[in-house]
Every structure is written in structure tokens, then in C-alpha cells.
Image 1: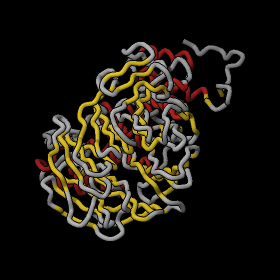
Image 2: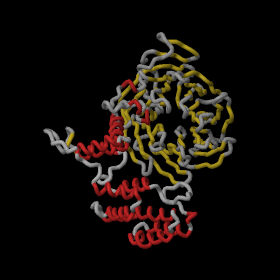
Image 3: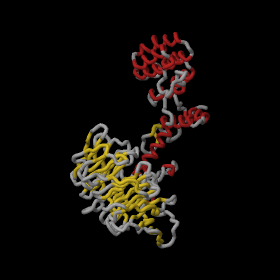
Image 4: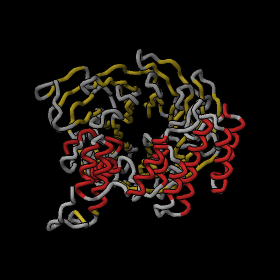
Length: 541
């Protein structure tokens, strides 16, 4: 079929922004059609548009590589008009394949000749040349690059060779596989990241329209009010699997709440035994056990299934102020009121202790998921990042007093609450650096805690002394919600790690509020119902 005559508007540049080249777009679409298995459609588009996917020289090279015409392929490479270094590297790949196929065919002399007269004169990749040379002497020990196990076949497949050449040659010569798929996926990701309220699984995104979520994706409606604690609720933490919520209070108890498949919480165990207010809790890596820490008191370890206290950890002359787990679940980390940090085993044996100004009397404590770093507030304005393996200490230094911090799931970011009513986001991977600030919540007297949350932890939530829960978009720093409902200062918030639509808040009003989506249909009907200290709500407050 002859190429149709150009019609009015058939320009070389397409799109309203003038950034899409017609030739590139057609070639990428053609490549996509072939990749999807639509051979006839791809060929038809090439013919009708008059725009070939590859030049005749490149098509010849592809045929020669797949057909094992190695010398001809090397000669064709030189006709494409490539940079000399690229020609050398591509020739090396082709001749290496030739060499290995000779070995697989037991043509040792031909392989040796190829190595000596064709591969070595290229004068590149000398380490690989030595490996190829040794394969002649010890063929049983040789494994080609990319192979995960020893194989009697040393050469890679020719289609694999073509993929490696594709990565080496410029994309204008050989269009990368799945290029159109990559561009479309990239566009969707950019739309998702720019969406202020995106808090749903990516499968809900569509190519048919631009992506935009509404405010209804943010948990902003009180679904339940948990009313079992008899005094201020200080701390909250969901289990890693999202099936439980643990809370601690000045009433000297901690409570394990169970989250049912419908997202409703009920009391599982009330943990009693502390003689002082319980300042914090920490879930074991497998969520089978829970640590509770009294204020400058002991740490208790509980069995989540039975609610039984398994151990009480005490240190003579000192009280503990914080607790955490190492990732193997066999070791624990405690902060003590003598400003030291200690590592203990489950039997109560102290394994290691870092003395000096390592922690404060009231302090948060985190252990990274690889077990290498211990994080603690070491001074009023500084956070210690202690690498216990490398024995290296780094500091995050602030101008204001630090009241609390929270570590992201990927261990890369630290959320730091300050006395001046600001929350700072620090990147602690490599050299520490401040990357964002969040403002709007109120704090003057109490320890207020914040957390990461939502899909891919795209949001920041915080308590506040004005009885509200504040939510910011993590990337932009924009405040998107201030949720009323509590009647006292909100001390702590926790976002369910497996349910991006579930948020919990703890308050001085002795309650815990469970927040969900506005359009979520609850099983419990009517204005309000009560059961075992649980108050079900239909309204925002």
C-alpha cells in the first residue's frame, strides 16, 4: 500500500503543547502492537504510515543476531552510524555469544580463534576476557553472566542477546521493549502523586480519564468511640498486621483491641499490673506479643492471644522510659531514666548497654527493621541515630525542643514534633536533611504525637491540644483536614498500616476515636449504640 498523501493538519509535531514528535509516537505504537502480539496490525501501521519501526540496516542486524550470523552482524553494526565505543561494546556481546556457542558445540579451536583474533583485539572488558579464557580450561566451572546456577549450556539465548543489545544501543535505533507501557504507567503515577487525596489502591485508576480523588478518601468521620480507659489515654499503636490496636493510659492499664473483618474494634484484653501510668507500648515483629512501659517503672511483656503477662523487666536503681523490639523478636531495647539504652533478651538478661547521654527521661525509642539502628531523643534538641553494628553515631539537631518522633515504614524518614507547634520531616538515609514542615496544630504544654499513614504513607496525622486531629498531605505539606470530636487534648494518633481508611486518636477525654470514610456503611444502625465500652457513631462527631 502506498503512503497516503498528507492532509491538512498532518504535522510532524502533535499535541497542544507541541512536544510530541509524530514519528516517535507512531514508532512507539508500532512497537507496542508487536509486543502485544498484534503482528498484522503492527505491520499494517508501518505500511500505512510510511514510518518503519526500524531502519532496513537495523532490521538486518536483528535477523543476523537471531540467525547466528555473527560476523555479518558485527559488520552491520559498523554501518548504523553509532559511536565507536558503542560499536565496540555491541561487537563484544555478539562475539562473546559466538564464542560460547562454539564451546557448547565442542568446537574448542574455533572458540579459541574467536577469542584471540576477534574478542581480545577489541581491548575492552579485560576481566570478562579472562573469564572466557578460563572457560576453555575449566568448562565445568564456567557460568555465563546472569545465570543463577551452573548449566551445561554456557551461551545465553539469542533473544536474550538481542535484549542486551537493545539496552546498549540508543533508543532511536532500537526502541526499548514496553516503552509505551512505561510512558502510560509514568503518567498515571504522576497523576496519583499530584492528587491531594489519593488514598485508594492503584487498581482503581483508569486510562479513560484523568485521575482525581475526592476528600471522601480521607478518614474524617467518627465510626466508633472506645470508652474503657478511666483516665487520659496517652499512646496508641496498631499491630503490624492491622488486626489489633493497643492503647495505654494514666489509669495504669493498657488495652488490646481487636479489629474484626468489618473494621469494627472490640476489647480483647485489659492489661493490668503497672503501678504507674503506662507511657507507651510496642508490638513484637510477629504481633504475638506486646511490650508495655510504665513511667520510669518496669517493662512488661504480654501474650496477645491470652492476655497473660509473660515477663516483667526491671533494672536495679533505674526505671524504664521507653521500649522497642529488634526485628528477630528475640531481643528488646529499653531506654532507662539514667539516660542509657540497653538491649535485653526475652529471659531478662542484659546483652549490651550504651551509657551516657543516649536518651531522655521521657523519650521515644525506635529500632529500624534491619536491627542496625537505634533511634532516641538524646538531648532536648537532638535525636540520636545509633548504628550499633558500625558503632557510628549521627545526630538530627533542631533549634526547638523535641517532644516526640515517629519512624516511617521504610525506615527512611523521621517525623519530629517540636515545642514551637511545628512537625519536621527528616530524610535519614545517608546524610540527614530536613525535607518538609507541617504547621497548624496546637501544642503548648503536653507531649503530642504524630504519625505517617494512608496509602504508601502519603499523609501525616497529628494530635493537638485544641481537641482536633490534623491531617496533612505529606508531599505538598498542605493541611487537608482538622477533625473535631474529642473534648480534650488529642495526645496520639495511629493509622492502620493495612487499612488506609482507618485512623485512631487518643485523648485526655479518656476516649479513643476510630475514624473512617464518610460514606462507609456501618452494621450498627440508629443514632448510637453501646457495647462493652464501645460507642458506635453515625455522624462526624
